[in-house]
Length: 176
Image 1: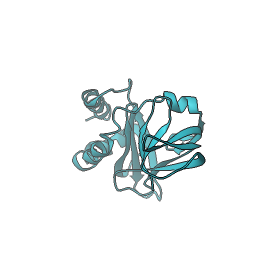
Image 2 (image 1 turned 30 degrees about the horizontal axis):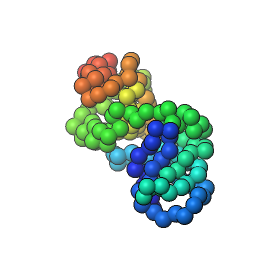
Image 3 (image 1 turned 45 degrees about the vertical axis):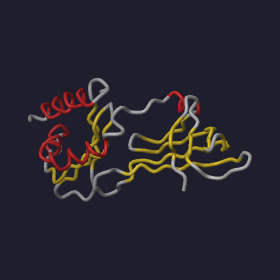
Image 4 (image 1 turned 90 degrees about the vertical axis):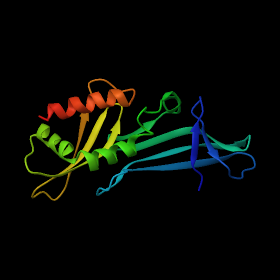
């Protein structure tokens, strides 16, 4: 199994190692799994197809098409949009931050249910965090399923300091 190592300026995906002579068509499938224990942990899937070549000791996948199916919906992504996309500034911290919220701030995360006007919150698990907001999975007493709620930040955050400010604002809006 090859893992993506980086994305180049024109959107090509650089993969470590592997043997390849010439060029071939390839499919890269990615699965995003929530870093906290929760039912239905798969947050999304992506499928990227394109031309695979080998250069300078690495395999290079030039995307021809991409498809993403995640918590926000399902859609195709053009190679041009993929190349223009930027990494979320919180991506490398997300797992640690979600685990910290889950373990250290469970009462505060659960209090966000008050913003949904749905009484009887049995549990709240932070599911996803990015520069645009926080997604929490709520279960309610007597309900068999769950509700995923997205709490948008008024402005995208660019670093941990801005995130801290927005999280305090979010918790304050829930009466904390």
